[in-house]
View 1: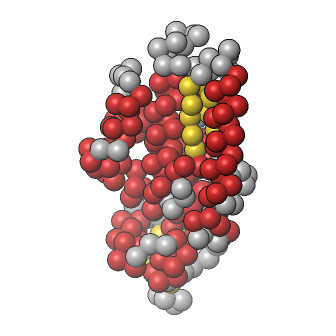
View 2: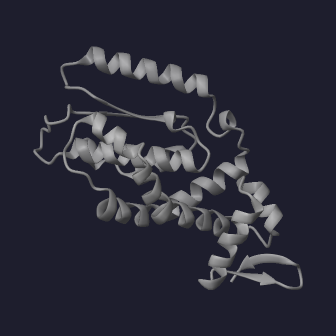
View 3: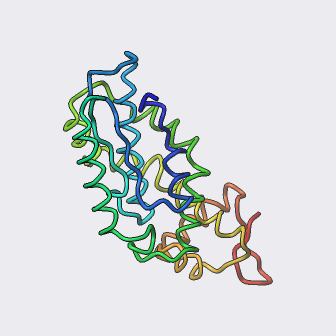
Amino acid sequence: MCSGRVDLAHVFRAFSNGVDGVFLGACHLNECNYITHGNYHALTMVHLARKVLEHIGLNPERLKIEFMSGSEANLFVDGVNGFVKKVRELGPLGQGEGLDKKQLKFKLDAVTQLIPYIRLVERERLRLPAMQEEEYRKFFDSEELSRLFEETVADKLAIAQIVSLLREGPLSTAEIAKTLGLTPSKVSKHLNASSKQRLVRYDETRKRFALA
């Protein structure tokens, strides 16, 4: 299967099912068997997914892509062994980052719900021309990318986490902040935006926010 077929949904489904790390093997760049540059799409997807992982408090090193040909079994073995060692050092998903199971679930659920939107952002704002791998890394580490990510993904991801959490029942700003690991001021900002979008409402009786 072409590595370009691997989607954000596949990666985050694996994490949602309790996998501690995801390794993706792809053809060498500029050596696509299908002449579709699918390996470049995979590289972009991995960089974007790692950015999302970091944003929700998970170590981006839990996702890795390596390029190799079908005849380079040694590269595959070395790559997988090195990755397994790294994941063991990181520990179980969430636990290694200090997140409890409830926090982890809400964060991953929020990402899963937002994947169609993130795909659209990637296609319209983050699709890069075929370049050297190092140039991709520099772009995804750049201030320009950080700005684009904040503008297009970060706020929507935070709101999706809050909405997912409120499905369990009404909560105060402080309770939401504690569960999601956000500051109360940021939660208030997102709750105001969510109220304007009629996603949440303030329950005067319970003095809590609830789904609209």
